[in-house]
Image (cartoon, rainbow, N blue to C red):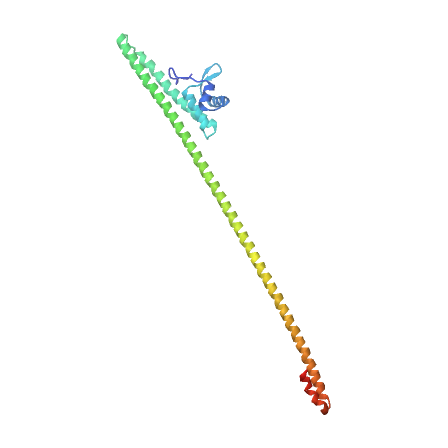
Length: 246
């Protein structure tokens, strides 16, 4: 039986715990089953669990953990056993206190007053221990959230960097392809110009050859006429000069 419950400590139903922790009611039942499976003790009204503050701390640990739920439940069971151990030690000390109870009413009153003070101190220690554990769990939860936030931030930054690299690579590729296209057009233009120059040169060469052929034929005709004139009788050589008049 649990002995770590404080007098007049507030109790909560499953529905109230679900609203407090902002989780579903079946999730609260699931966490309760995991805790009980590992040895955790709940106060019960029949089959219904009744939750106190230390139970809520255990449920929060299950909600916020990154470890397997059974491992976290084992930690919660260990903490509960430590609280029960403190309570049991206090209960064991009481019979020793009452073994030599004085019969004098004033002395009995003083002894009871002392016992009450000791119980109050013990309860305060237990409450402080529970609060410390709750704060520790809260700190761990915050650290886990910070770790998650930092990891997410690093992941987002890496993703943004990869996107930038991909964009730059694409831009460089596009620029390279643009330059290649420009160089190709320029080269084709030069080839076209060289082709046109070659065609003009061929036309000029052809024209020059035609002129040479024409001159050669003219010279050949002149040579033939000269040779014919030389071979004529002398009386007719006077016509030699007629060749130059033509």
